[in-house]
Picture 1 (cartoon, rainbow, N blue to C red):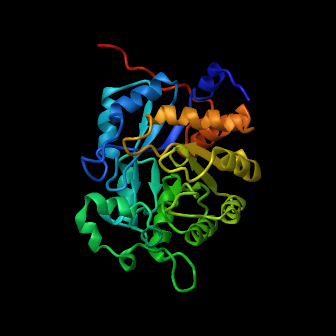
Picture 2: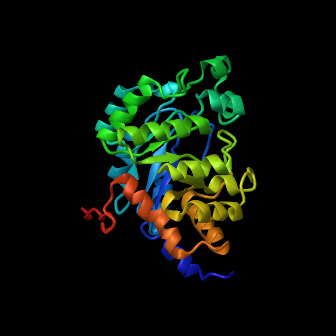
Picture 3: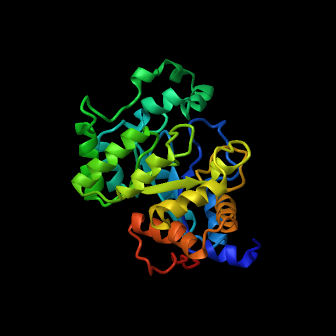
Length: 313
């Protein structure tokens, strides 16, 4: 299937990538292809609306605040991941982040029991932070009690996330934890829940678990990083098949741009979009996944104009 380049480019107009790793991340030696400002400028050049910057270690509100002073015409959105390095799963950290402008909350990633058990991102932590070798599976964060229900500290986080009307991503929780979290969010009235890259080595969700998450009302995130040669954990054809099963209204497309080997995030997103078009996803479905759904999650009016350019001094 041949698709004109201009048509693919147009599908990125107004798009939001909700999962891009900021620099520095973990260690100065964990380099990226571009600086955050260069990434943001490239996204602007591609016609995108914005990028959510994530860190496995620290909240990104301060760095995003500084970025927005230096570039206009595009939005940078900050976030917090509830790893042990940023306070773990506690409501006061989420409240403080929200008051500083955080637009996304992630459940823990590398510091979950599940990630450590699966040999997920935690193994990269050990490569650059030697102290993390003392952090064992039994130290990892786990959100369920002996009855399979989410713990009280998780419920407190859900309450704060709901209060500020933020999306809650499941991070690197196990699929059973993510489904229990989704059920708790439904019970408490939080509708904006996203299952992070279920195909990743950190998570390893089955297709049945992915479909159950969507049936419960959650969103499913697919990221470009997992399709690239260095990982090859999922083929775009498989992503297209799952989109057709759960519906584009339950999916968001991101990049999870990290490391120094991928192309920059905006080009990663263009490649993923083009690949999905090749495997039968329609332009309307792409718009739903890169624009409509992220706008809903981030509380951006669907008819909102693009961010304004600051007047030149």
